[in-house]
Length: 157
Picture 1 (tube, helix red, strand yellow):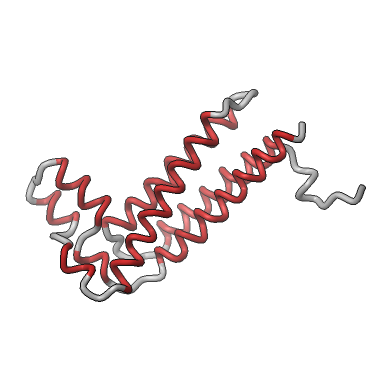
Picture 2 (tube, rainbow, N blue to C red):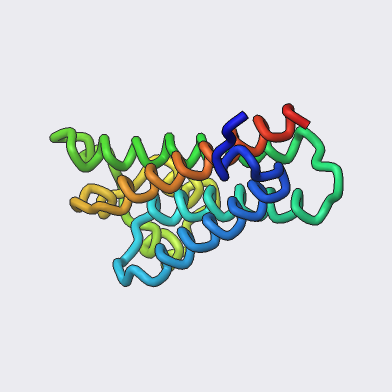
């Protein structure tokens, strides 16, 4: 049987690759010196949460099913937020429903519920054209694909 090098990776190898790739994506997001809007920060938060869950999974010898499921939920939620930001950017009039930016809400001590709502739905500064949501979508897709490969290699054992 002719196996490629991808087929020879164990499920633990995939988990380590996910942690390193996710960390690299987050480091790149921090190094890109662009003022991040509330949706960009939410995408980073969802990516970081998923990477932390997988890092905890690496620590355990036998990975429970809940870790990949939880990481996938975080990353799918990140994809939804990235699509929301793309919708705000490219659909005319979509940003008119957006309120003040996250910095304004924090500086003026708005309630936590307003801050969370802004982090999930966006603000006026999310309408500025940016390549960040496309890069985030690509990162989420890569991480989800690697997670699928982890699950697939786990089943073949």
